[in-house]
Length: 253
Image 1 (cartoon, rainbow, N blue to C red):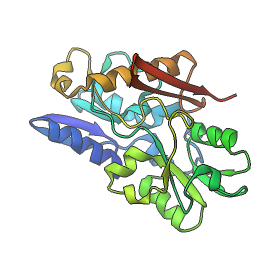
Image 2 (cartoon, rainbow, N blue to C red; image 1 turned 90 degrees about the vertical axis):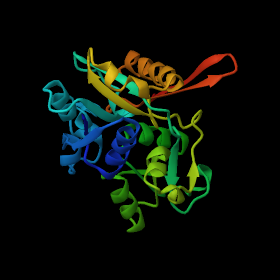
Image 3 (cartoon, rainbow, N blue to C red; image 1 turned 30 degrees about the vertical axis):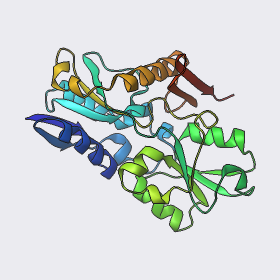
Image 4 (tube, helix red, strand yellow; image 1 turned 120 degrees about the horizontal axis):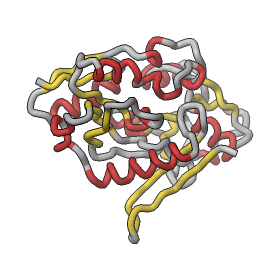
């Protein structure tokens, strides 16, 4: 029985279930992270430890032998990986794009002064660059919480990952999708990563999707080269073009 460590949010559990179903026998072990416990900060970079707020406790449990593998959203692994751990599998990627939820049909149709909710420094910086007349407001919480806050009027629209909405059966809440070559996604967005201790890759290596790995590794390498993470607005999106892998990047000015 392979024990899979994961965050306890509904989306994280759905993603862990995708991994568990692809393995012969697996048990899901929810682990609370700093990012889940601290709901006071408006943005993730205000909690500290960058994207590690969603991974460090799970990685510690993996190193301590309390779980056999860890399931993460690949975009949460932008930072430096602890010694002794490796990503043994990247499942086939879902939609990498960002999605806007709200009453509008396109980014250009949102009126100046509208409040757009997000907790991502990348999304906020891209919104300010592409639509400087909009007001970006901090909006924390899991997907369900953010959608509820939208419905309650905390923002006029919100930006979320399309893959997360799809996995939760909430694709009908997507008003429109943002062009990934303009509104460039987070490195690894839409992919699920399975992390193990070095030397134990065979536990999950059969789940690895080679095209997804090529794309995500290229994105992560770029983000690392410019110091990207939760507190640095950096984006990277790789895809298979006619002449091989192509990479679109963005760094806040």
